[in-house]
Image 1 (cartoon, rainbow, N blue to C red):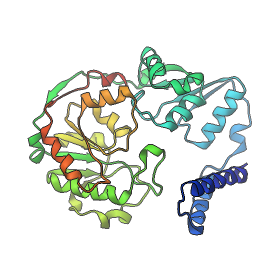
Image 2 (cartoon, rainbow, N blue to C red):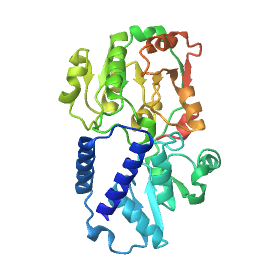
Image 3 (cartoon, one colour):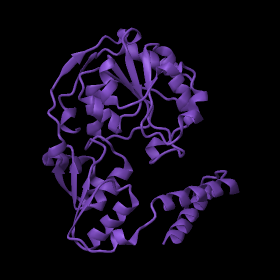
Image 4 (cartoon, one colour):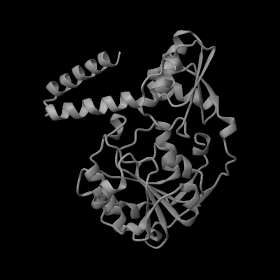
Length: 321
């Protein structure tokens, strides 16, 4: 029913355009049409993959079209449908797509915390999907032995110690969810500003960038020698601290259980649960700033006014891999 779905989507876009008086012209519609066709071709449905009935369904990311169709098929057949969390955390992110695509498309969810903690999360942060309550299972075979640590860090040393910056990925579209909507030109401007502040800071290319580096490198105003590639696990030991501006991501889960200071510039891209907000503050040095306001330099100065200079993974380790 691809054509029908596309028609429904266009009607929704037209209504949004009319209601909010946006300027979506014919060329924009052509771009949207081309983008949708590419998605459809990439996820072209192979009927052989979904036509046979099974007794149990084991699914990876429900963002994958075939996985989602199989999940719906399994639920209609009243079979067990297991979805495996793939972002290495449970209970921190509050993204709409996770709650409605993952939790609502399965009977059993396999994630990175305990059944009891997930149950408490459902009563507090997931009330809007309570009617779908999946049973929860801990990913025991993927849980690493984690050491509890507490540390202190003098933030004035950021100018002297070696740091690594882990940005979000660049994509040909603006966001996967409303929480992530951002002006990429302003985001790159912010990145240039950040790299200028800390001359010992390196820039880690996101491994899943969907825009080729040569398409954006002319916008970057710092030495390309500071740009690093490769797996974060293989290079992280070369650095004394980490800077992030996006924490509802696998990268944060990868580094949160490393005994290294993390500076988190909250520029408004993350949507987290109340629990997640508390855990992030305990683990990081958090500065809130608005990159849509050119005066964020004043907020940036607040980094050196932080009184609490200690950090710990004591609580967050219960919710990440």
